[in-house]
Image: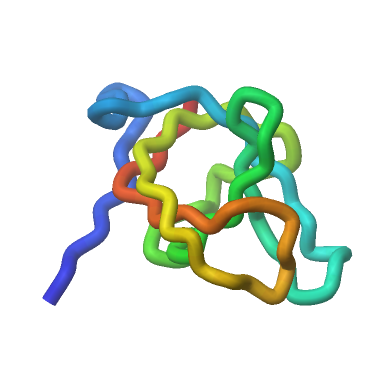
Length: 87
């Protein structure tokens, strides 16, 4: 069994980058996406984290791995998040 833990803001994610959350729920098949260095990424496991702190434009720290999977939303590459915290 895998255990996913959302990092808190007192502890930065290891190897993290800064990102900005955007809610693309208005587009068919989309939800939360992360903008990193001007590029949009689609997290495939965002629901594995406690995302109660998320809102449009929220700055976050994220550790992730690109997965190259197809998605319904198709606005950017898919990523698997290993850590997500407030910035």
